[in-house]
Image (cartoon, rainbow, N blue to C red; front, side):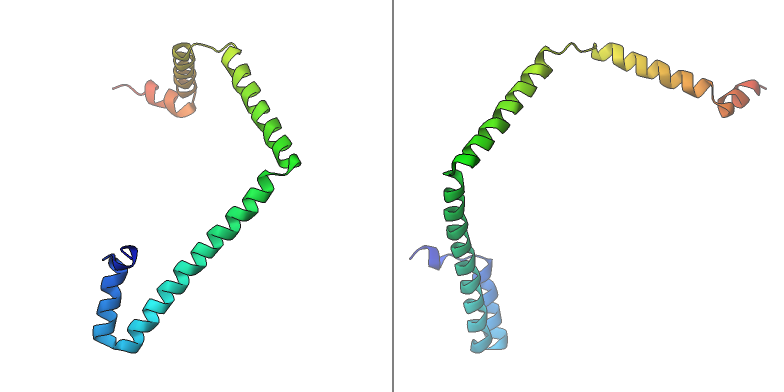
Length: 115
């Protein structure tokens, strides 16, 4: 009962439509809102029932188990795989960037013109 009495934006919209455009348009808006809510509620109920039957299938459980196992194995491999130091990688990339800029023809032309 309290849920139907909530003063949300749809209440004020239906009030405005009813006062401005008449009772017929206000009722049409209310019926449309009810139909929309009923459709969403039925869709949620139906899809949850379908999902429940899917989850209970043996093939789904085996597939999700294999996917989870591969995910955990991947995390384990990435945790023990040797990595380069981030600071060394950053300085190497900055060095490569500076080297590439100094070897470009535009950079050589600019450095040669010193007044």
